[in-house]
Amino acid sequence: MSTLTDLQEQVGKQMKTLGHSEDPHIILLFLLEELGEVTRAFLKENGYKAQNNRVNESFKQELGDVFLLLLRLSYVTNTDLEKQLQYTQEKLLKAKEGI
Image 1 (cartoon, rainbow, N blue to C red):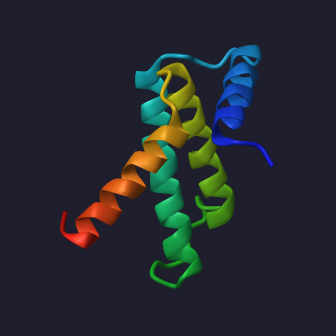
Image 2 (tube, rainbow, N blue to C red):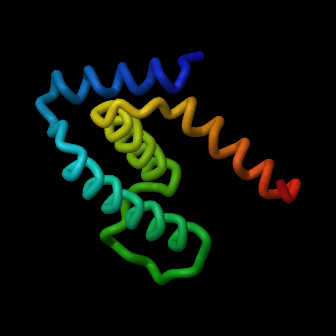
């Protein structure tokens, strides 16, 4: 199983090979767009929204798109996702414990 760091490196290199933008502003815009698509797919699959012909990918596929863009954004901004995830988990634990 790959670590998040491995995945970041893999996606970063692949996107560079494909000629995709390495501008974090552009990647963030794509990430926000994909989050909207995740929301629409989730609502559609869970009966909260009428049929929408523009939504033709499943919720799980859209989550994959979001994950890929998050890996890209973290790669181009040199952000260690594993470290940030650990920090956030510890922060939530401390908040729960009232520290």
